[in-house]
Amino acid sequence: MDQLLKEAEKIKSLEIQGATNVALNAIKFLSEYAKRLKSDNLETCFKKLYKARDILIETRPTEPAMKNGLNYIMKKLENEKENCYPKFISDMIEKYKNEYYDLLQNSKKRIAKIGARRIPAANRKFIVMTHCHSSLVTAILLEAKKQNKNFKVINTETQPRLQGRITAKELIDAGIEVIHVVDSAMRWAVRHFDVDLIIIGADSITSEGTIINKIGSRLLALVAHEEHVPFYV
Image 1 (cartoon, rainbow, N blue to C red):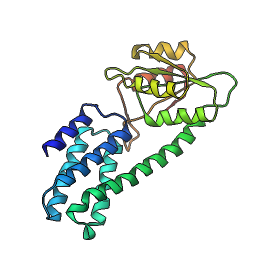
Image 2: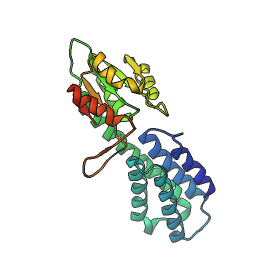
Image 3: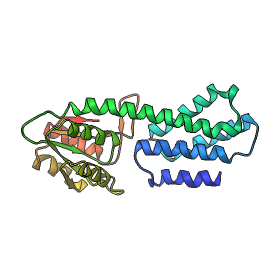
């Protein structure tokens, strides 16, 4: 359990970032924990796995991809419980992790194609703005680039962890023009660069439609409202 707690701290401290990375690493940590279990009693193993799952989920309560992934794994294990042996649990978790990864990737591809439609095939350079780092937003912009859309991106550095720099690097590496601004300049940037579209990711969306995301997201949404700029999450 001590090793699991050390690994969980990597998620809690934001050493591991990005919804997909967090989810897959959490499942990997669960798999490695299963390998270390010494008990041959299946019920005892499941009880410990559920406890480990809860510890991992608590590291980032607003990270639905991780929570859904861990629950997906445990549900799959429960369904196979009659044919499950403690020494094979880790291998089963790895198998289900790959299944979950495929689900995430297929969903991301569909969302990227839908999102890329919001960037028109215009003669002038379309201006897109984003905040923080979202693998989905990056996927949308990369898909638009793949479709030869003419656009550039304004993105914020996102204090205090500077996740916006991850976004900037990924886009620049793909050949997309990026202007990187400090968070406090987001209102100025929307006006100065005549932003056409703002798109951000979300840590979580509640059943009531409330968006939970990195600090600064609300301010950017208010700026978009004031400047009549379309804002997508």
